[in-house]
Length: 218
Image (tube, rainbow, N blue to C red; front, side, top):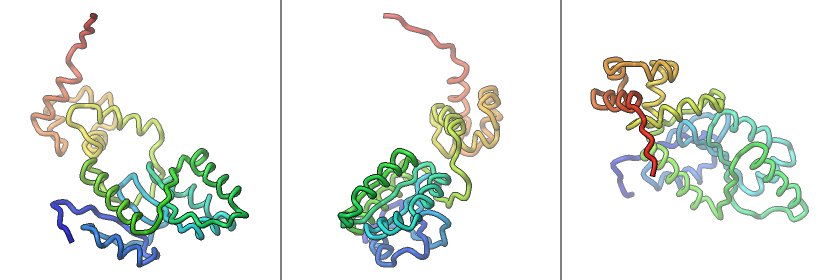
């Protein structure tokens, strides 16, 4: 197995198909098995995936489980995805299946992704986990809370727009200062108290929020 300096972690429901777990373990990942209330795979604090084979998708639609599961995962994760392995559906149910896919996408705002087999699905999990945790510096955590409201996401987005501030540092700043107003009026000494800011980061933030904007007209 190829080793990387950074191995992403994937939390997997302990009832999930062990064959799929073995396919994921071929990649340099840290696998944690846990009983998940919703979702089958957690790749970061915001990304979770519900995996269904084509037959399971079909049966969960018929017995009503599908939309209950969709509602739960959609409430708890900002980026929830439904992954379907295969497309071998009963032709008599195609209309209902297409309707369900539209409803999941439009009404529940859940992306639907199809995979030819579990090998391709396992690679997808690894790549997303690596992207979330390494490139975007996201934590990996089972989310038992409802996903943030739009205003909460907007608040964090505003803080992330400050120079050198990513998602984790933005959350740490908001945890300390509570509001954008408090953050914007904080001095360098107060800003330095937040982990990951330091003197240079504090200076850059103060410069960004205190420099007068000059409109340049052509």
